[in-house]
Each structure stands twice: as structure tokens, then as C-alpha cells.
Image (cartoon, rainbow, N blue to C red; front, side, top):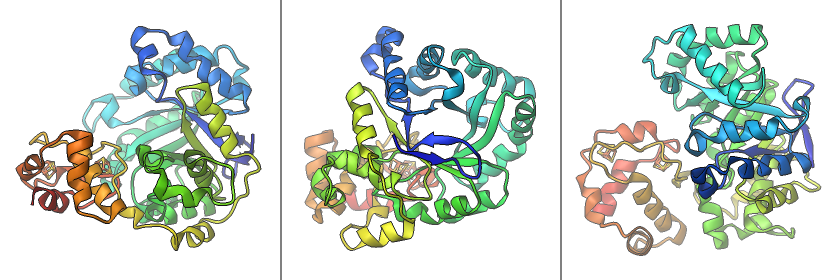
Length: 368
Ligand code: SF4
Ligand code: SF4
């Protein structure tokens, strides 16, 4: 395993971290949690020492599964992260310390531990959300840190690069978790550069673009040139090779997924983001325009399945043909394009979109 320094701390973390939102669905549903726990145990054997979990992942079982594994290894040899935010605490903008603490203690109990190495202010979609969470919760984070319940305060975000820079400049966080991949790297590049410069750890989620990269291997084979890697492995390596990025999270359902992720960073060579971007720029397409399928736009008042429509639009971009939209709607989603015409342009989805896509305009185009 290839290890990196976490920001300006003395923590040595594996270049691949275990994302724990992809434990086997059938096993989760059937309550076979011990079986799911074999994945973090296997990852540990392979040298993966950073495990990222959260309440609500895997039908709210991820922390429990991860805790089963954690209780079977030397606790001091794994860095564990979990998350909270105002939405999770479900208390509007005025949560009490008691509710914050109850939630944190639940995470600790489920994980069979008395401290978290990293506690995220979770899912800061934009600066407005971040400001509300800061005002309401940051003091509670600090108190929990003083008591040793959490070791490092970090945040997770879907903001674009310049907004991330604003958060970084506050100096309030040891590190951050952001979505970054071969589809959207330009979108957040300035954010990871700012964090790195500031001595923060940078952890990356969604390195495969919500499945878009493995599902469209022919568009991404350029990432594998000169290697013996598969497209998904090369996409993980693309992210991990950024010197500004400390940990690349790989969501693993099977031991083979763990092996794939480990192989992706064998003999890794780190390079600055700008150099990597320049190297690939001439070969790529307009990746920042693509929907990553993150589903943060869900909850449309007209019940329009936005990620499905945006996925179909991706196919227009990736194939360069407008018919790509109809083909995807017919053969993959079985979705009538007329549904797109029901959009009332309320803007709710665009405000939530992690890629800041012009959803309304695209729906109009799809509806014809
Ligand atoms: S702008 Fe249109 S698609 Fe988006 S949430 Fe509103 S009605 Fe739904
Ligand atoms: S439209 Fe935006 S928020 Fe919705 S799934 Fe795509 S990238 Fe995510």
C-alpha cells in the first residue's frame, strides 16, 4: 500500500481509503452484518487504514458493520471518520448540544470506539449551508474535540473550487472530503490546491463519477495508456496521483473491489493537479458539464426523475449526438421525454446540484 501524510499532521494514511456505503445490499437487507464486516477486515489486511462511514449509509447499517470490524482490529491502527450536520440532527437551525451529543455518542457506540479520528460537518452543498452549520454546530464540534471524543474537525462538500477556498481560508478545519474524479476535476481543482497549500488533508469521494466512468470505458481508456490497469483502476489512480489529494475513497462491496483499489495505487507517482490536468486536457471532453448521478437534486415538486434525465443528457455530451438522449431514455430508463416538460422552473434542483448544471435548460431541450 502507498501511504501519504495527512496534511500537516503526523498521520500516515493509506492512499486508498475504504468507503463504507457499498456493503452488499442483499447482505444488509438480510442482516448478515458479520459477513459485510469481512470487507473492512480484508481492507485492513491489505493496508487500508482509513475507513469512512456515516449514519444513514447502507440503510443506516454502515456504522454498525464498520464497528463490528473495528472491534476485531487494533483500534490505534485505523483512522475512522463519521459525519453529522443540521439536516441529520433534524432540528432546523437551532439544535441543542444534547441532540448533537446523542448523535455523536450513537456513532461511537455503533463503531465500538470512544473516539473518532475525523468528524465531518457533512454535505456542505454551498456557502449558505456551510454558514448555517458553522453557526449552529461548530461550537459543539470544538467541545467534543476538547473532550477527546473527536480528534479532527473536517468538512465534506460539494461546493465548487472558489467556495471551497473560502472555507479553507477560515482555518477551522484539519481536512475536507470532496467529490473529485476524471469527469469533474477542473470544477474543484482550485479548492484542492488551496487546501493542500494550507496544510489540510484532502479526501476524495466519488472517484468513479457515480459509475459514469466504468459504464463508459471507451471514453476513458486514455486514462489507462502506458499501464496494465482497467478503466476503473486507472480512474482511481488518476485521483490518487494528485499530490494535493491525500486519500481516495473506494466504495467496496467485494474483496475483489478491495484488490482492484489496492492495485490502482501500486507504485504510485504523485504529480501536481495542474500538471495532471494539462496532461489529460487535450484528450478529454467537457467533463465539467456531466451529471455524476449523485442525486442531491432529488425532491422535485413535480417528481421529475432529474438524475435519470441528466444521465440521458450525459449521453448526448459523451456521444456528441442528440439522439443519445432518446436512446438512453428508451433503452436504459424507459422514461418518456414528456415528463421533462412538467418542470415549472422552480430552481430547487439547480440550487442543490453538486455540478451546478443548468438542469432547467437541459430539461427544456430534452422535452423538445
Ligand atoms: S426546476 Fe424543475 S426539475 Fe428542478 S425541482 Fe423545480 S420543477 Fe423540478
Ligand atoms: S443533476 Fe446535479 S445533483 Fe442531480 S444527480 Fe446530476 S450532478 Fe447530482
